[in-house]
Image (cartoon, rainbow, N blue to C red; front, side, top):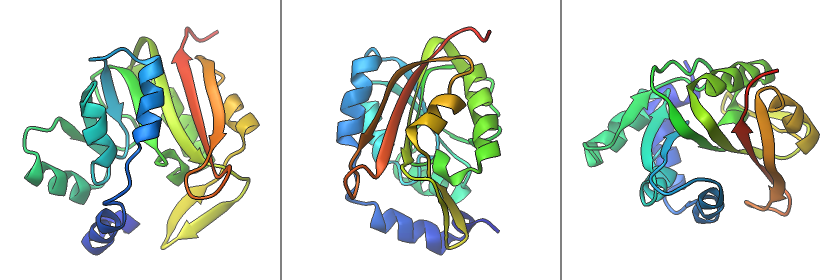
Length: 190
């Protein structure tokens, strides 16, 4: 059983994240994406970023954990949400942007490669990926959940096939330089 298959872990995370909002990240996203563009959020969790994204974009939320989807849908029955695994990217829909905030670090490096390939397939022409990662070169497990850290050069390499790099920068979430934002644009694969 995965960590967030347990309802108590989901409820604990929702409580812990209740005051966490990605206002600065979404302000940056607006520099790269036109208002009313379609956005797929990977790993929406409690929906904090989802709500902010909806202020400017047509957003579809997704999570592979049913408890997050069910809890969000009970409070927001009109929300466009999907149960979807970020590795498999199993959807027939397409989007102008795929957004995630510290979700992809829960994938192994091989799973991240698979996810990036799947994301390329569901992005519209010239679509962008906008993702955040923990910065470092180790992997940790918290309650059985992986947190894979990355450095800029490794992320540049991972997102080099089929994408043009628009931005990669370190930023502070909890400590100086603990996070990385990467923004890439879809191009034809060579």
